[in-house]
Structure formats: structure tokens, C-alpha cells
Amino acid sequence: MIKNKIDIITLGCSKNLVDSELLMRQLVANGYTVDHDSEKPKGEIAVINTCGFIGDAKEESVNTILSFAEAKKNKKLRKLFVMGCLSERYKEELAAEIPEVDAFYGKFAWKNLIADLGKSYKQELSHERRIATPRHYAFLKISEGCNRSCSYCAIPLITGKYKSRPMEEIEEEARRLVASGVKELQFIAQDLTYYGLDLYQSMKLPELVERISDIEGLEWIRLHYAYPAHFPYDLLRVMRERPNVCNYLDIALQHISDNMLKIMRRNISRQETIDLIKRFRDEVPNIHLRTTMMVGHPGETEKDFNELIDFVNDMRFERLGAFPYSHEEDTYSGEHYADNIPASVKQERMDVLMAVQEHISLSINESKIGKTSKVIIDREEEDYYIGRTEFDSPEVDGEVLVGKEKKLKPGNFYSVKITSAQAFDLYANIE
Image 1: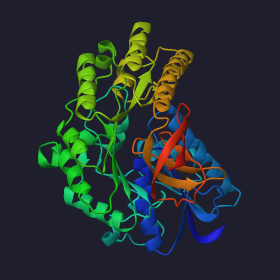
Image 2: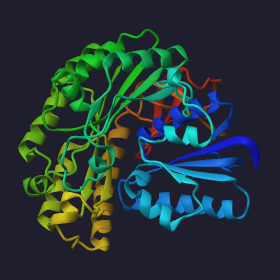
Image 3: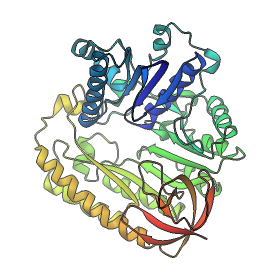
């Protein structure tokens, strides 16, 4: 154990990562040495930032807590703290089951951790973060919470109602990040498209993106987690007009059959979804769409699933992820439906869906062979430099493996020629 050293372990999404980064800045300001997600934690204190979204994520969080609790029992750790979404939702149950944890904090109560360490929260640093990503990109959280009422989702139970951050505050943070060397910002929220309705009584995402895109030195802006119903179409104009706004949109559709969209309370129809995608591609011809689909929600018939497969084949999404339905207590589905689709059927449907997507992804990637792309280099590995195009978000999308014929510097942009392709990665040489 290293005295005054704290290990932070972040589980779940990038929104959790931002919370960890805010905490790390406060800890450093209070004299601690901090490591994030180190492979071999050596600190005397550990903080686990948990995810509580679906069953697999909850299981990972619990197993991680138990692992560190065991380390504490073996005198390899002096204090153990738990924060984040799982802690927000199940604080009392966790405290009873895992007494080795010194304190549990809800998602928005982590500031109390500073006081429990005998230190002071520094208000003047409230929007500053110690970035845990490579220094050339960062996540920019524009809101908290969600006002949607999707049948399966526990997020509103954890995060509460939607709360937009003021535009001025977001812009100030963005300018500070760019001044520190950040060249790429990933806009994140539970729902980007709702931004501004609570604060300004109108959808302000297009205006916000436009304002941030004016920051000199910011090369890429990428948009994550849009909601399909009542989409703010002026955002497409901003994408066309602003060269540093990536032609990339992450928009979770979840399903396509009218039967399932109604059961899932998605507030959109099949035809409206198809019209939405057509408009995206008409107005931003080179756009790459990332979406997420769910299989195995109560009520999903073979007909519904086959309709989903046909839709994915027709739409040819550039990026697609999928997950099986997880029955969550206190959600609409948890209260009103039986989880009556066997786990084996859920997994089979997910495997079929992802096999279809793998074929589509390979075809799309192969069409890029021989073309030139702008990439940012994230890191150097033994045989390749690893980069991304504007169509690739870190950690969730494919990568570009660039040959080492020339010396490249991580964090810089280069022009490369695509030489070959796999389903999810590209190979390239420097131009």
C-alpha cells in the first residue's frame, strides 16, 4: 500500500468516467496521488464508480466491489469507497451485504467522499477534471438525467429528471479542455436531443454544437446518445456547415416493429423511424450512423425479430451494437410484463443480429479500400499505430491500423490510404 495514493476504478459508460475525472481533480487538489483503472492497484484507498444499467453491468460492479473487499480483508487496502449508479440504486442493500466497504455514495453524492477523507471540496475547481483519456480527446457531458419513459430503462430511476447544463458553462469547460491540448470532444448525455428544453424551453443542441464548433483548435466534435422522437433537424444543417462536426451520429433505435416500439414506449413508429434515417442520409450524405438494438424484450415475437433483421439489412447501419433485454425492477416492463423469453432465445437472437451486422460492416469497410482518410492517432503498438477516422468513436467503434513506415505521433492527425479491411477494423498506410 502506498500512503496517500488512491486508485479510481470506473465501470460503465463515459458519463461515469466524467464523474471520476471530476473526483480525481478534487483529490489531486487535496494532496493525493491518483491512478485511474490501473492494472495493479497499489493505493491505500480505492474508489469504485459503479454501473447499474442492466444485469451484466450490475454483476460486474458487484464482483469488482467484492474483489476489493477481499483485498481489504487481507490488509492490502486501508479504505474502500463505492459510488455511482449501482450505489445510487441499491445503497442500503449493498451496505448490508458488503460491510467491508467504508461508505457508499449515490451518483450525485460523491462530493461527500472528500469530506469523509477529512478534506475540503474546492468549489473553484467544480468544473475542472483530471482527464483519464489520452490527452487529445475528452468527453463533454452536457446534461444529467432523462425525461423519457422507455419501458425497460432504469436510468431515470437512478439519475432523475433531465437537467441541462447552461450553455455558457459548457462552452467555458470546452475552451479549457481545448486549451489543455484536447482536439476532439465527444458530446455525451443520456439524451442529447432533449438538451435545453428544461432550461431554455426549446431544443438548443444545434445552437450549442455551433457555439462549441467556433472554438479555435477544436478539430472534431462527435455526438453520442440521441433520441429518435422529435429530433432537432437543424442539427443536420450544423453538421453540413461545420467541418469540425463529425458526420457521425449515435442514435439508439432499439427496435423497428410497431408492436415492439409501442410496448417499449418509444414514442415513434416504424415509418417515422425510416423517414428519420432517410432524412439523415439525404441531408448529410456521408453520415455514419451508430445505433443500438434490443432483443428479447417481453412481447417480442419471431415476426417482430424477423422484421428487425430485415430492417437492419435494408438500412445498412455503419455501426450497430445490440444487447439482450434485462428485467429491471421498478421499470415499466418490470412492473407490467413477465420476463418470459428464455435467455437462450435472447442470446440466439442477438447472435443472429450481430452476424448480420458483421456482414454489413465488412461490406461497408471494403468499399473504403483505396480511399484516403484523415485519422487521429490514439496510440502506438508493436506492429501498428492505432488511429480513428471521424466515423470512429473511441472504445465503441473500429480502429484504423496504420503501418509503421513513418514515425507518427499520437494525438496528431494524418492522411492515410486504406489498404485492406476487416469487419470492424481498417488497415492503412501513411500517404
